Image 1 (tube, rainbow, N blue to C red):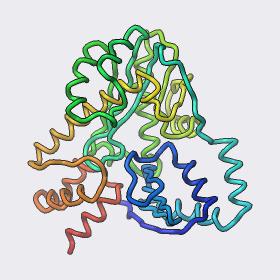
Image 2: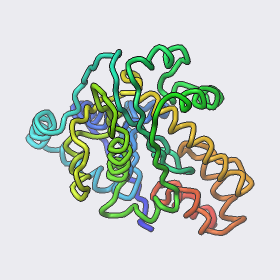
Image 3: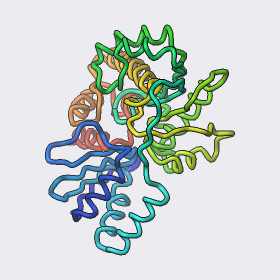
Length: 313
């Protein structure tokens, strides 16, 4: 298991602005008190505070922090970096019509310490939109678990979809130097989208963007015939019905699976990656041993080290 590192640096206003833009696609919905944002790159959790303090936690925290520290110290590097990002890798806001037929994908579980990663693609015809609107379909993060459990069974009876679930055990086996979180997501999105476009007529293929298009396809270099013609949109679940449906279905499956895991080990498994998950992790390790985390948790998260430190006290 790779060691989790925590590093804190101070950055100026220009660097704060650049960081805020750079991490836009990986920002978490909830922000800690006095923080501008918190982002999860898969390898590292980045928290930028209003005071200018930036905290990096994860296996690549030192590399990530050093990059920003060096940029902040050198004005030429800062100007070059901004120019490079704008030209090569900037995530642009894209708009598409609402009343379209589309194939779209979204994932859940990547920011949750417990539970699997679930990626879904769905095919929504233009004619399906009134039905989905009447159900109140929207981004799964804006609906309660109870609402999702009620709505999704109605959706899956009508809307075609394809889901891939990556268990914690599989995730821990795959994750490593050549396989980070974003690469795992890219591969899974490519698989479900490739299945859903077969035999369907659509106007757009849409992904809820989690990184730049260039980086996404770089992750698929080893894949045979990766799907092309994708429209990458930030917060696509609010702009495209097929992405919103995929978000709901993924969340529905995730809820069911994390509940199954909790029932198996006789404990409620909280969502997210906050300190509460560590209290539960300590109890699980005390009862079942350290290896239990391989089957229920994402070991590269910094929570793992804190759990093990508490156990050793």
